[in-house]
Image (cartoon, rainbow, N blue to C red; front, side, top):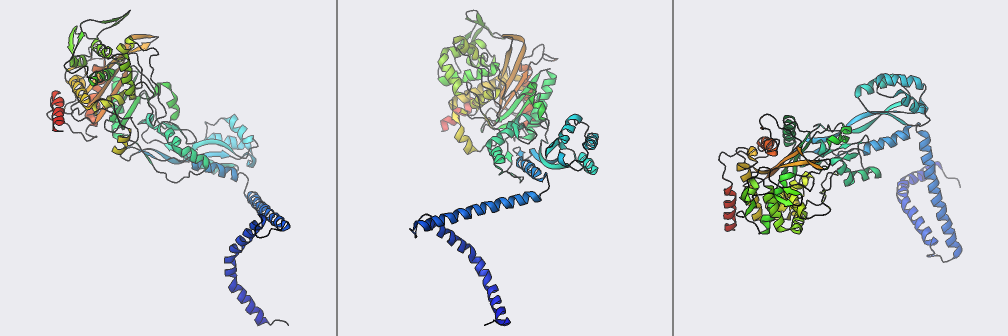
Length: 602
């Protein structure tokens, strides 16, 4: 019997009402169907062989049907996209992946950041007239090679780079040409607002915004490069990297090193400021340097970071380690005496003093007169094995690793005998990276803790995990006394900055030229700490081949150039670091007496 129109309408209405529920339950039906097929395929519920085989065939058919549908959909999408767009999408993804986190100084000032810049590309298959395109582009970009540009645009490739990083004005002019097959891509480009400030620490990136040196390379080794390759990095704002550098102190350090390099006609200069309590590098500069925005100049050997990638015989600054070893052993005290009446003879080699006193010296006198003879006698009294073990413990015989990938291994004698111990005791015969000596001298004044230097901010809890005691606290007190005494009465008097209780040790090393020590080519250095009654910062200044100038009375030694440069730096940076000058400074002996009172109270 035929259904009336009202019945049909009622059935349709009922069907429409039930449709949402059916659609909602459809996934459940599909899942039940698949589960049933799987159970049947593995033989559960239906042990008949023909039923199992039929279920397996149905599953295979479903799998291949889904695969073919996915492939067909992808082909349809590719067919609908204009030629060259897919290539542009892939390259655009690479550009997004090369986004990098900002690098900040300890106060939040930007040291490195990404900016967007346009790059020019071509799609040769879409070009109408290659010669017209070449002529028009070279008129706006005259630095393009005409032959190379023509070869690229004449190729059968779907995509070619023409020029990376063009200016907005160039982009507008090229866009106005309306050339088909010529386009722009927005990429990330690294910029360094400070230019030369901290360039050796920050490092640089390549054209694809990948780190190739310094902290930039360290960032990539910490996982950023892997994220890019995996496609998980994006163009979103990433967590910034906070360095221990203080941009203000960095500026002062570089400025004073530049002035000293010019004044004393040195071929190079380097220096650093470090927090003795945490090992944080507050500032580091090495001249000649380069603008981080022009990374090609960083490849010039003259622009290397002398503090981490260069190794040098550090001269008398190394004597401080010998004194610490002698005092820490208990075989020597501040009241000990050493015979410096004549040169030490080792076969055809003679060890003598630069300014010979030719008398028996007390241990403090050996330090302030920088006696090679007295220092060598202390090291020899302890023996070769003890000397090597102490330097090993102080981190002087192994490569020092920091966040900077660039580091140099020390040059250690292959056969270490008494003559080696005698000369290494006063800073000749062992070449190390200056930052290594800085780490060891840090331990001499901070209470005896060897703390690996870092370019990142470090908390007290992190310091406690990496610090290792290498000398007794009382040895550190005695070393602070000797260093302050040297700034008052010894070779470091020109570093005695009024109001800041500075102490330190000079070093003047003869450079090796053609296998022999040169009497005219010197490396001078001064390592100082302040304030010596409660050391907070260590300063290293190095000058490579300084000359005698007006006012130095023919001398080119560290006391006449590196020491006064250190004084200039401390006077300018101390207030920035929260250390104010004091009108009345105590005597060097107060370091010993105050420490003795503290020990008794404890």
